[in-house]
Every structure is written in C-alpha cells, then in structure tokens.
Amino acid sequence: MFSNQESAEPSAQQTLENAKKRLGQIVDNKYKLISVIGIGGMGIVYESEHQFLGRHVAIKILHPRYADRLEEYQRFCREARAVGALSHRTIVQVFDAGFLDGTTPYFVMERLIGENLEQTLRRNKMLTARRAFWIANEVLRGLAVAHSKNILHCDMKPANIYVVRQNDRRESIKLLDFGVAKLAVEGSAASVDERTGLVFGTPQYMAPEQVTGAELDPRTDIYAVGTILYESLMGEPAFQGSTREKVFRNVLQGKPKALIPPTGRLAPALQQLVSSMMAKNPANRPSSAKEVSRFILAQGVIDSPNDHDYR
Picture 1 (cartoon, one colour):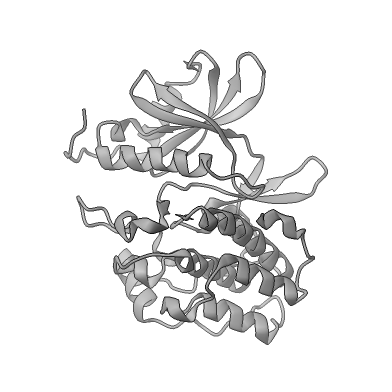
Picture 2 (cartoon, rainbow, N blue to C red):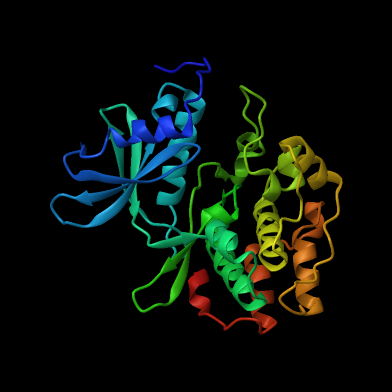
C-alpha cells in the first residue's frame, strides 16, 4: 500500500486544478465539497456543506500524492487524533473523520471566517503591543491545554494562528495545523524525517533544538511564540536568511536586533519576557505556557480573561 519512492512535485497551479476536480463530490454521503479554502503542505482544505444539517464545515483531505507514503499518511492521521483529543476555545474543533474512497484520510473541522496572522502581518506589517500580547496570550492558553495532554504543536507560526471575526465584530484566536504535532513522551522523533533527514517545521520559528534534532518539550513551542511576538512587534522575523540553511545558522548562532518596537516603547519586563522565550538554551526559557500567560496578565498589557480556561 505504501511506497518510499519520491514523485515529482506538481506546481501550485496544477495542485489547485487537481483539487478543484473534487468539487461537487459528496464525502461519506454527508459532506458536499463546495470550494477550495487552502492548500497546505500535507492536505487540501475544502469548504463543505453537511447535506442533512446544512451546516458549513471545513474538510481537510490528505494530498493525493501522499496517499501511498507511510510517513506523511501517519503524520496526517496524527494531526487528526491530536486535535480531536483537545477541547478549548482557542483550538480549532475537529468533530468527524474518516477515509475517502476507503483509503485517503480526511477530518472535519469547524469553518472559520477571518484571516491568519501571517495575512494580518502582511497587511499591517506590525501590531501594537496590546494586540500582539493579546494574540500571544490566547495562543499560550491553547498551548497550555495541548501541553497538559502531552501534545506539542511543533510548528507554531503566524500562518497557523487564525484571527476569527465574530458576528458581533469581536475577534477570537484559533490554533491550526497540528500536522507536525507530537507526544512529549516521544522524544525527538517528530522533528526529523527519518527517511529523508529533513527537519520538520518552518525555519524562522523553529527552536535550536528542532534544528539540531534534539529532544523537544513544551519550551519548544514557547520559543516559537516568542519569535511570533518579536515579529509582530518589530515588523520582521528575528532570524532571516536567503536560504533555509542560512536561517538555521542564524537560529543557532545569530542574535536578533534589540526589541525596540517602532509602534512605541515596550515595558522592560515585557522585553525581557520575549528575550527569555527566545533563549537558545531551553533551560533559560520559561518552563510552561501557563507561566508565560500569567506573567503577561500580571503586566496589565491586556485585559485579564477567566482563569477557568486552564481547567
């Protein structure tokens, strides 16, 4: 069923055209595929309608080119199980899963309206401290729940943080794409592809221990949130480079520019917090997402939410 052979990657346009061929198809006699929402590294996300309830949902289907590759197949299924095991207002809800044509896995998520943080930053370049720390705090609250279940995200980045527009014009945050997620008890297995030796993740937001294939723990996700905070405040990533290898080198050896946001002065305690979250040695970072969230709240930079979300 599964193959180790590498096949030629289709172009983005070809992938989109192939994805559109499924439009109108009804999955498991329940979900009609209406439109293509997005195409990621592992799967294609469709807007779909439940044929009986009339409810609009999002369905993520494994890329056809990965259907016969065990490593990618397992990663996709791991994402479905990881998100399905979590319940929190800041984590996208998964409420159904199955196999298309009996072989290709898919899972069904809530349909979100809004944009991801990458799109927000592309449009606005940077955020005010209040908004940046509010988003970070919401992310940390979701990560605290995942970490309490021994699940690490391992690919936190602006594109995986969704800013949802509510009907009352308020916003909420949802964590997306647990495709690189791993159990904390699994050691470093999910950070490196054993078949190809490639490191999973997005270079600008990867902790040094991910780059080197060392053991990961919740502080790996905390590092990523620190880099997202830095970029949101400064308008540019902390570590850059013209190639993936140069970014990795900067992550391991480089030092980011001083955190002095163009939008205004940042309290020294918050500057120190972001720096500690991005420490190259995990031992020098905060020990938990909950700890970082509570520190942010104690600084008064955002309004205090209810503590019961940590239960």
